[in-house]
Length: 319
Image 1 (cartoon, helix red, strand yellow):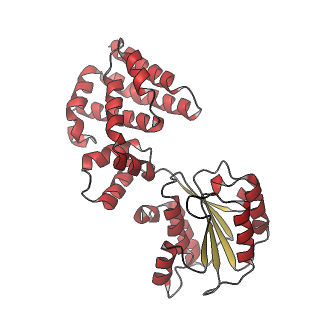
Image 2 (image 1 turned 60 degrees about the vertical axis):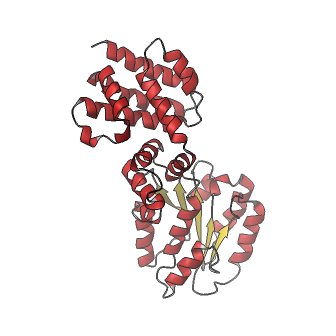
Image 3 (image 1 turned 30 degrees about the vertical axis):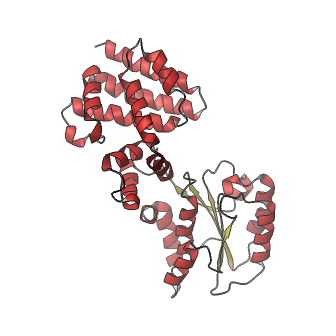
């Protein structure tokens, strides 16, 4: 994960500011990956101390959350509360122990309620000269506008499928096959933590089967397939995987099999390529964008996927 983060624009920006010793007093790091948010917080926190001669030791302590000048709030799996904000205030009144700067790291700030955010706001408005803040959140929307106006934003967008796959390979080595990794990387919507959970739990196998059931079904079977597949809790992951299926089927149909991502599903992809025209496979990508937009606005998922699949079938019948 560290290697993945170091290649982001947000990390490079913070590192450049550190090299010039021009850190802002407060940053908001956003990463839509709750599983890896705290790890990302540590990776970015280390940047604040890179100029120290004892950086190697400091980095190890930050990983353990035991460096005296880098404090993490709240406790793991807890929400940042008013009491935490009060403790932060007390820490801000104390001078750094080893260097000239103390860093306060807060994750996941998106879970903090308005009262605790407002309590911290007073410190952000008049920050002590020796204290910097690194707020971390999975989403910017729950963060108060008054807080947003007082921080510099560090945004990490979803990662590319290839980046996620490479990260999973580094983390798990040979524990999973490259095909398994490819499926999870394709279905995670650019969120490494989602891919990890799918891989470790084996849920991707059911998701892949559901995606092929929907892609290969006929008009008469569509209602029953939608009724079953529509119950999934992994809505965005299913849509992302469908996009890969149709892409791979198009590659098979146009004789570009060497570029197929899901190499272990050649038989199903051949079948999909035979059953759908080039126009229908291309149209599927367009309709998936519509479905993703509707799901983002809380549309009824079974209705979304039924509309999508019916539209692709209709386009296929035209030729």
